[in-house]
Length: 84
Image 1 (cartoon, rainbow, N blue to C red):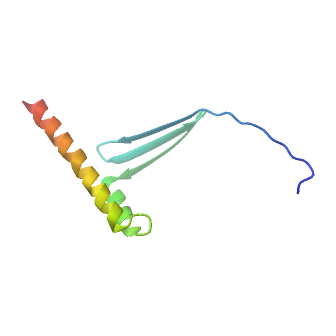
Image 2 (image 1 turned 45 degrees about the horizontal axis):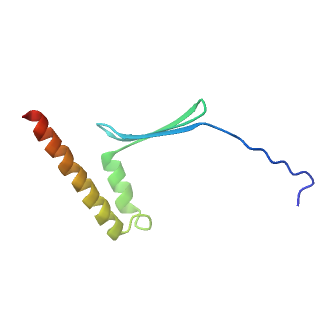
Image 3 (image 1 turned 90 degrees about the horizontal axis):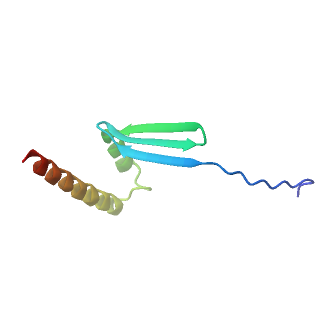
């Protein structure tokens, strides 16, 4: 139990930007005027996922693989259409 209780409501503006680029996945988080950013390339991302069996069990990895395969098919179709 504390002697003094203070309750403050803090209001901040948060903007989260997550995007794929030519090298991998880039995350930027803006909290008010502060930016926090991180980048991971595709190979490292895959190795981290297959090594963390608790977070990414085989069943989940299969679902992710299927989703990424679907994404790849859509991108390939769009590229083919743009080449015509």
